[in-house]
Image 1 (cartoon, rainbow over the protein chains, first blue to last red):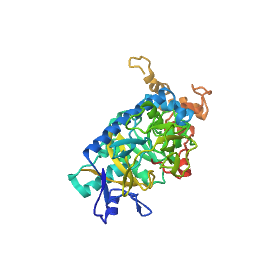
Image 2 (image 1 turned 90 degrees about the vertical axis):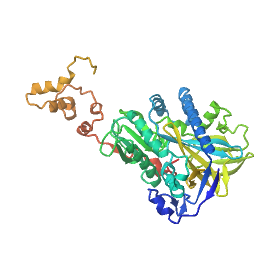
Image 3 (image 1 turned 180 degrees about the vertical axis):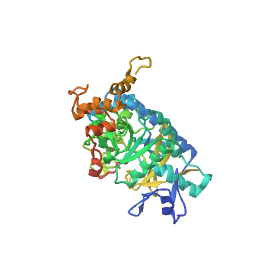
Image 4 (image 1 turned 45 degrees about the vertical axis):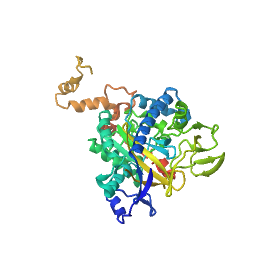
Length: 379
Length: 86
């Protein structure tokens, strides 16, 4: 696995915008990298595929363990949501996707789970659409990509259709983010291609009529995909209505994903599968005997409030507004490093199928919203 | 309803039509069911909350005068410096 450079296409902005990609740069600093890529072998692609499958199965076992043994307090999930989570798990409320963030140590040929973005993962559009058209532009059919995101989304929506409540699937996100809206509209587009009737509304437009949630036409919401974190929803004014809803609307991702999107899942996984080659040693509240580790808040987003400790000394930390909910301590992973920066692999699971990867690259060993998206090919 | 039921539930509307001799069975049934929303007689108990019989039907909710409140989700996004994306 290494980067390879291409001759820069002077029209790359126009090209990516032509497929609907509007947030390729931030203040003229490219977020999308067009002129170099990660070259991976078929063996590496297979390794990521199998690792993703194994991690997904372990995560499902971990959810079962947390629910069965009522470990919700470890995740700081409000009491009123516990029963909702249990029911969403028992009723197998539809889930569509998630993205594992993996560290790859080329020297040891090892993949390690950094975290699981199980609730509101983005970069789906870049992975499924922009990256594919990039590959078609530079390589055509001559080279392949670990990428069946688009096909898998449509297939998964089709599989879920018989289990959706009501005749309309609502989609919602915040209104201020082009990135969120693009990802949401991509998901909605694939649902429509699967034959599902959909409606779009912004998260603040969701209504409550005393009985159930409603859309702007006062129609009841029976099934809704939300690109909005569960931990935000349950702490807002309407949060309590989630459990008072007489229609018991299906929220996608389902509330049991609150367990997997919380970093508390990392020490739970380590406890259930100690020493597993895909996991990093992790603990609640203390670093154990580790002297090289990363301290992460349970609910941190975009790399906020992370501390790197090497030889028991903090060598790097990020700022932010998280941490009141507690921390976990995870062994420091060896990240893949190129001259252009540190890279992690985002591995998508859609439905039950690993189906695509993204590379995110950073100047520092923390992935943030400024981290660059690097396309890849298998060769 | 059970498939082998002999209860004449499905004839209720027709019975109202028969009694009214006017073909306005549905309207009368509607009135009787929700009469306490606007006062008057009927078979529903005044002890019941109007909300308890409106269910999720849009027309009933309108009759009850209940419209949705909005803005109960989304406040975290405006307060946070972080995106909802991960």
